[in-house]
Length: 462
View 1: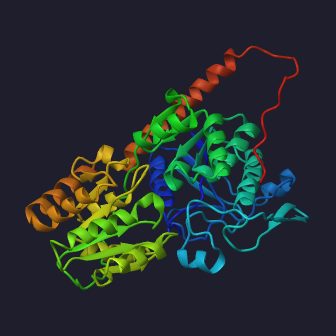
View 2 (view 1 turned 60 degrees about the vertical axis):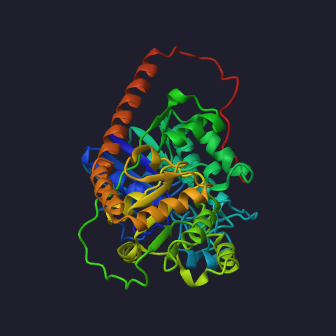
View 3 (view 1 turned 90 degrees about the vertical axis):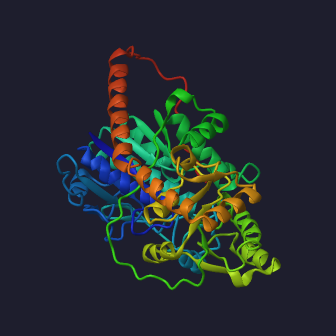
């Protein structure tokens, strides 16, 4: 089984759960003897897997020119990373965002910009601005153009596209190759923006991707329900495959000095979706019971200034530490001093960070409005909007050491069953089932010699 897989980030260059999921899934699919042709906008050369990079994809090149730059496909269980020259990264280092663009949130803003095409001897290439944001939709469209070209250069059995940025690429690959398409829904515009702030352009891309897919994978039942109700997708076409966690190797990280015996942590993008305002309101109530408590808000996003202002209004600034965006080593340092982790997400398709917290020995509290709540029996759950319940849960963990130890031990035991290996087995089975169905359909389809009455819809160009 060979899979043409479209992604948008890959560790260590990540700033969200998408890249982490792609790493865990890709490694585990390789253990299932799948060949993965993993396409990304740009590779950096230090990704955490043995990959082969094709540094440029030529559009409109001759076969001889293409063969000169394409590496050979190895045997089963191998992975190839195909680099599409691009400056894009959908989740990126916040400092880079701040330097290059005003786009720091999931509810994107898209100024009207285009990418200049450059015709070279070997084929068509593109000239980029080197920034993130203004040309995002143009880049997504260009990515789909390259996807169609790749279908002429590689042999594969199925197409697998991760999240909305890659859905147009998956669609074009399907149309060019007539191979079945799977779209993997890690999040939707309703998660990122809420009901009232939907960007219709993003919604339309998501809608078309799910409609044209032969199979939709949702990371939780929570996400499947959104896909069925908001995007009107037949529930039989949507399969739930929960995310897993990458086992953490024993590594020595420097430990931060504890400034309090009661440290409560929020770690995630500081955006509407993650519910940071509810964390702050709960923190105010916790301080009435634990005046020495300290709260870490790790991450960045469009709501960060407002959250700082709210903390100042409540006069609890001395109890808060805003870290900004953290990299892996720094996250481990935060876990080393945390007594409890809180994820009060308004809408969370799954939530890998709670698994990472549990793996690090930190008790977790998660919102009922999350996919992780479906699979974690040994985590405290509360509605995101119920700050009294969130505060009481935090107080309970801080006050009762036996409860804290129980959550730590039970949580660690449970995540042993939440592996990417299990997810990969399910997805690999879906690949084979889908391939078999398509083969049967191809045999049973009646021969039609007439002219189609309607051409397939084109992917919208923005």
